[in-house]
Image (cartoon, rainbow, N blue to C red; front, side, top):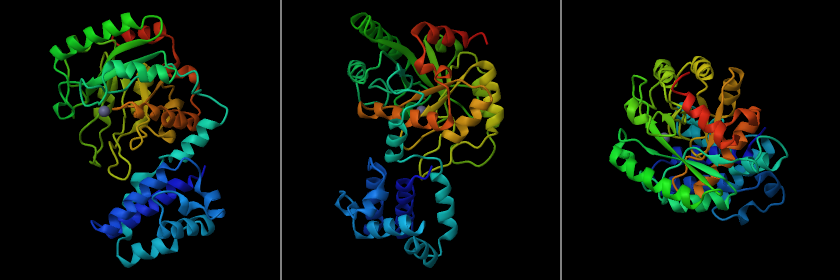
Length: 359
Ligand SMILES: [Zn+2]
């Protein structure tokens, strides 16, 4: 599937990189953001000559878009890169934008009939509240999830090993759990909040919490937050994480960021093989600049027999909508709904999560 909006956003980021820290550079960045946020494909807008009516789109963007749609590439951008002597730098930057989806592409994929379904999605298993680095209280998260038709959610604030993200001490965890219990009593029959944690994967593949601490949660997401720009092989770090008892979900496995960093380099087939054996779910993190794992890696994980979790990694109410991005990647990867924990009943989810200690 061609994603012209993503291609155009990428070309504008190329121009931003060529322009550097300057007024023009910032202008291109703003235009790229605008393009990536448009919720319809730009090709018909170009054909109808209405792209410039979109806020944030100026004459240069319009010119680049026109070249892209009509010629399949932009001679203007290619010449600018070449004249600046930045061919190599831009080529490596482009590698940091592969297998992402623009908002328009997500909307189109989600809009088709198909599976996994948006309507039957029961709840999201990675999100952050004011207990770590999120903006919302637990109560406001319940309201926002109910408004989206969800029946449950897993709260996964950061662990104490990640103080930079406001990780919770175990004393704070106890307080948070009391608040979750109270909410679950209040919303009984309508909504169930699960007690989760996002533990941090250390360099040696262990997570940053003790087993007796991990056991205080109903489920554990383990994710990498360091060494995400290194090209050295980190297979043993990631196989270590999915081998650890108690780990249920491998969160944003790559740790990549759009246009910023490549994330962990590893033999993913080996990681997926072990994850499948231990029934550790591979996360498709829908956070816009993560999209991690992406559809191609997800398809490989599926071949190995993996389970999946489609999560928003939201830090605010509006970011809960990032699940659409995760669902879009899952659809492209052809993942059957039955293999995705977000569609399971409460009992099935909890039995699976508990089983992570014994598999
Ligand atoms: Zn994380």
